[in-house]
Image (cartoon, rainbow, N blue to C red; front, side, top):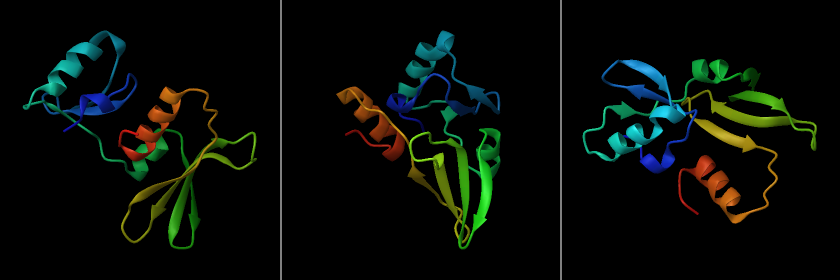
Length: 120
């Protein structure tokens, strides 16, 4: 089940009713948020897979005991903008690095929640 606080416009979720992936749009965000607060919500998160990483524009590189998935170039460090590591033995994904300019408390809170799934 998805916590309504995690839902952002543009997120992909699974609809149990229509049995398809849905992209959260602004025009039905409030209805979706209301439904997610109900105990019998018909929406669920979509597990991250290599197919989803490719679909989201990531490229794969094999590296020892893991795969490196990357998207974009970091203009400051001249390496990958976002790097995700997939462990070959168990298929788990880990965030590696990123370039973020943080000016406000809410920016830090949102970044932390996005990366960790927990409130700061």
